[in-house]
Image 1 (cartoon, rainbow, N blue to C red):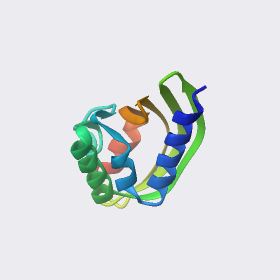
Image 2: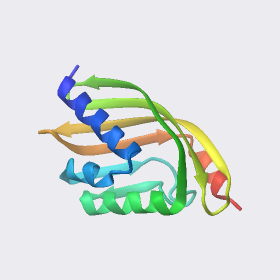
Image 3: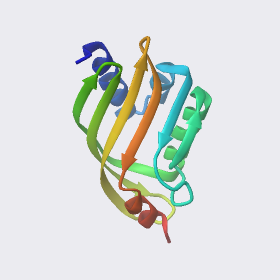
Image 4: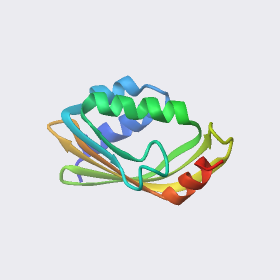
Amino acid sequence: MNNANTRLVRELYDAFKRGETATIIGALAPEIDWQVHGNPKDYPTIGCWEGPDGVQQFFRVVAATEDMIEFSPQGFYASESEVFVLGRYAWKVRKTGKSLAAQWCHMLTIDNGKVSQFREFTDTASFADGYRA
C-alpha cells in the first residue's frame, strides 16, 4: 500500500468537503484525465474533462447543478500508483429539487505526487432520474 498516495487522496477529499476546490486543482498533473462514467446526456456532471481547467469547469458544473447533502468516503485502498475510494454521497438537484443518494467508487492515479487520472463509477440512473423534471 502506498501511504503517501493514500494520504494525498484523503487530504483532497477533506478539501472537497470544505469546498476548497483550489486545493484539488493544485494537486492535479497538467495532463489530468478526469472522467465520470455514464451517458453525458443524462446528467451535466457525467463526462470527460481534460487538464486542470477542465476539472475546474467540472467543479463549477457540480456547484451550479447540485447541493451536497452528504459526502462520505468509507474506504481507501492503494495499489502501486492507484488509490481506490469507496463511498456514499447524497445531493439535492437544483433544477428539480429532488434528492438522490448513491454509492460510488473513485479510482485516482498518482504520478510524481500529482493526480494524473480520476475515474468515478456510480449509480448514474439515480442521477438521471433526479435531473428529470
